[in-house]
Length: 139
Image 1 (tube, rainbow, N blue to C red):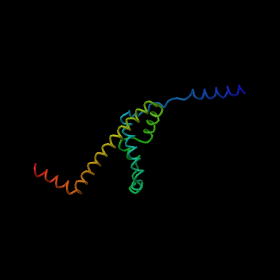
Image 2: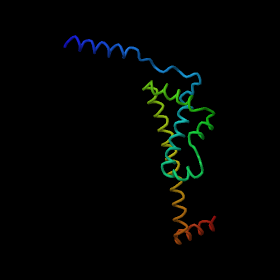
Image 3: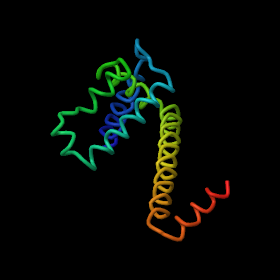
Image 4: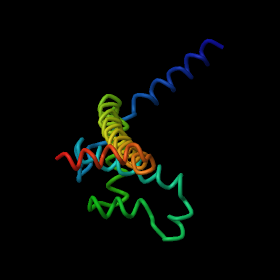
């Protein structure tokens, strides 16, 4: 029994020894380009989840748009993604960049939405309209 357990343990350990990291792709993107691509992919996926019907109706294919924008193809993207996913620390740093970019975009949208809401509220509130017109007359 001990011999069979030892034998299985040796097989498992020897199998783990042959694991190699994904080599750096010939067409390597680098952190910035990869972060750009992933940010756009996450935005497109988010848009598709909220309005998949419109994407289908217009025959918009997000992957094709991204590949076209960054002048790449699915195989090169996959090679780069595998490269980063094999290196956990680099992948985590890359994803941190993506999250920061998405947060910046989210904050930008929030500010624009608040400005539009303030504008709409001032147009619907006569007291605010009078105050705005009085300020304009004084200037």
